Image (cartoon, rainbow, N blue to C red; front, side, top):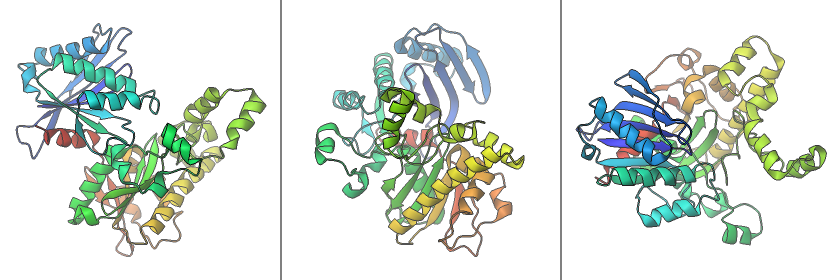
Length: 396
């Protein structure tokens, strides 16, 4: 078996895969250990059946032990040695990690050194890795980094127009995120199109509460919207995306705020929530649009225009040689209204979509472009956990 772990500062989200058939890993257990360090709460879903536990989890090591104990109690595993590998989603590897890696002391040091770039995520990852290493000493530990897929970006794409020593001394550059999802979608689309992955050109719109767009050129990340942090790029659920940086100084003077308070405002109270004053959830926004709510209409138009603008920009980078435009993640996969709003604002590309198809339910992927469209348009369900599982499998 392979355990896929998405660690947080006070939580461990996980999926357990049966890899007895390596070409078809099957996730049969998923769960979430949360409130670690407080009182502890574990949710398990085994073959679709949900179970809740209140367990003492005063630290990550104890949380890992609780998860393993509940696995054995529910006959998920007979002994811990059945878990051959553990794949970790790690947010930030800086520019040092360009592909999935076996986790050793050197990689731990890389994760630690990049805490300054991902202070909310990397500490929890490091703590969880150490805990699993202690409790599952025979398992191979593999790190899959959200930033690694984007390390193929050319220098002129990742560098900011700042004094060069800010990059050289302080690593100030664009890193990009959602890389595990983009890698999965790139491989999936190459399979759908039956095309060599090294020749695939895509514009992938990863649209969830956090959102970004990636330009994939010849199977590699060529540019992406998120930057030094996930705050850059698109308007998102609660994040502002790109704004005039002088707004920081202006708000500091007008509202007597410090830089941390302003950054907090841009991260947690802006985007869909900030403009609409309704919700950060696209479902609530589109529902309000149907009721002719002016703030919701404005919000959806602003959000869709920003996505459309990046699609056009990346089409230019690909010189019109686009194999597919893809919508993925929670909003991209499920909101026909959001997808339509974006596509209706892309005027310079000769694309057409089927209104009836964009509303259809689907399991894996669906082509929504019409036969009149110059470019393929797909909705594809992403699967970051499966991607991590498959990468971990390569090390076994």
